[in-house]
Length: 241
Image 1 (spheres, rainbow, N blue to C red):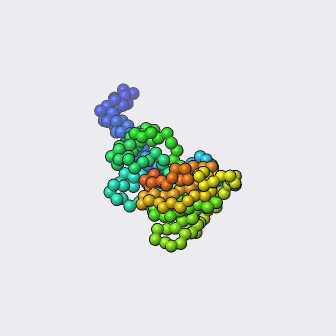
Image 2: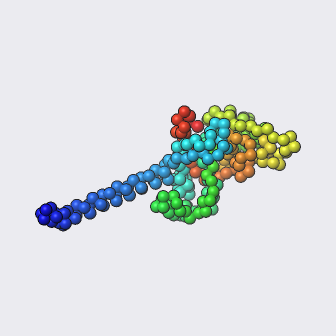
Image 3: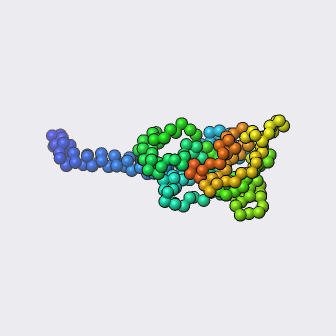
C-alpha cells in the first residue's frame, strides 16, 4: 500500500496526470475551434421561424446554409463572391451595412468566435431573414399582380421571375382590396426600377403582408450573409429547397 501511494504522488505520476489534463483541455479547445470555424466561415444550421416562405417552405423547417462570412471580411480585396442566381434562397442580414469597416468586422468575428456567438460589437437585436433572390445587379424590374418581371442588363426583352429562375417555386398570391393602389408596398404592383451595381431584389414566397425588398428596397450584396443549400428536416421533405 505504501509503495502504491508513493507511485501515486511520485513526480512521474504527477507529470503524467498533468499531461492527461492538458490533453483533455486541448481536445475540448480543438473541438471548440473547429465547430466555431465551421459554423462561422463555411456552413451553418438555420430554422425558418415564420411563414414568410410558404407554401414551399414551412415554419420549423431546418436548413444547411453556405456562409458568406469570408467574402464579407475580404470584400475590399475583391474576393470573388459566391455565385448568386435568381431563385436562390438566401439569408439577408439587415444589420450588415456598408459603413462597417473590414477591421471592425474582423474584430467582431473574433469576439463572437471566442464567446460562442453570445457577444458582438454591433447591435444584433434583429432577425436574419430568409428570402428568395429575384433580381440581380443591373436588372430592370417591375411587378404586376405580385409577379416580378425582369429585364436583364443588356437584354431587350423582359421575362417573368419564373422563366429566369434556377429553381421551380410557386408563390402564395394574396387577394387584396381593389382600393389598394401602387403607393402601398403590398398592393402587388410596382413601377420599374433598375438595380445598382451591388444591389439585389429579394422577395418572400408569401407575397402577402411580409417584409422584403418591397418595404426595405433593394438590398446590398454585402447584406446577403449566406445561401440555403439543403433542407434536412423534416425528413419527408429532405432535399433542395
